[in-house]
Image (cartoon, rainbow, N blue to C red):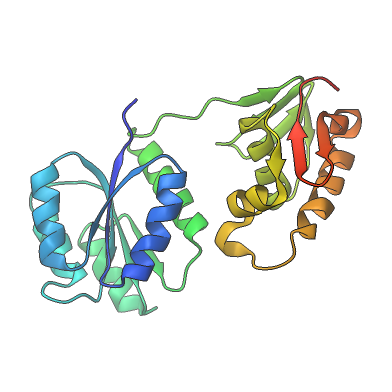
Length: 226
């Protein structure tokens, strides 16, 4: 399936880059606009945009005007971003047909999760298939891990770490690469946190924890051979 296009509209280039990096990592194509007029031009030129992430406060044409303009032609899902947490703004957004309303500052991962939820709800994003490694099964949509059909309780980061290992099974992964892909913007510090999480993950996987091999002086590798 072709990657879905997301239009990110914000006058702050740093904010656009942050959102774009997380969306690209989640397998979306990203278009950017730095003001409302540019956003409207891109939207009507491209025609196949799946969802808009739209800031409220922008030059030339603000987010509300952009939303009105697009809503007069299209029911494309729209997520509004705002620095305010004003109930009147939120109500105005929903009256204009906004699908989600997120106040800054926000977690990029939560934003991506909401985007994926909206796209699933509008049948644009198919449900992800479960990942498997031996008898371990990871359902990313349900955020659930099972071994031989039995649920395994993992923390959020342990779940992400296991998912990353399975998506890269058989590949030697450095601690730096794991840190960049699993912790990315959420963590700035010592890579030894990975060793701590791997130790806990191995323990929770029981005898299957031996599938996570230590590559001395480098990092880890997940192997289907225990």
